[in-house]
Length: 202
Image (cartoon, rainbow, N blue to C red; front, side, top):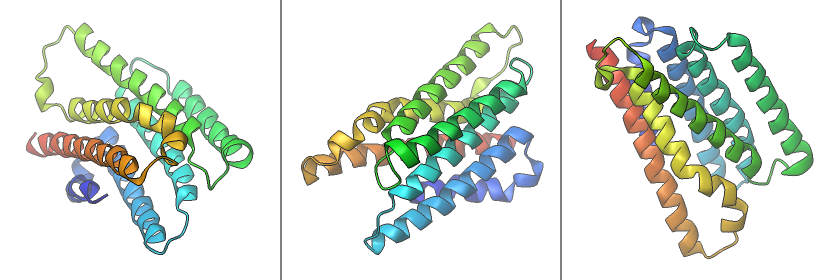
């Protein structure tokens, strides 16, 4: 959880100078950090924090899609992203109330979220390969952030899909799996930090 605070602090420091897509990422980091702290506090007091994960998933997906909506504003009409966000939120709520209820790990929305974000990040790479104008992608904040999302959701995809099967297994196996998830989170927020740092130097 602590990994998020480095890019969060940096984003808050330079928020006013950021373009729209990085302001969305800053808001994303802030909301995710708040939910992560709240979830951790519930866990400390031995309370079920899975309802927070349902809300976390909805906020995470919405803010990431708003980020990509700005990135692809000249390629994909805004209405498609809004429709996708609304459809996903409806699916999450139906899942939480009728399928995998609030106190169960929401594997279906998490898996669907991973598929959509992996696909969107791959589309970003495709657009880069089709550009005729030369750019130094290693100096692009969007490139680093997109790479963070791609690695994190690609690595976590199987974990999200099988979470309800993994949880009942041995404690040792659970620890290994969630250590992997923690590592992927570290990679994600490190790459977001690098992206924001590149923008700071620009």
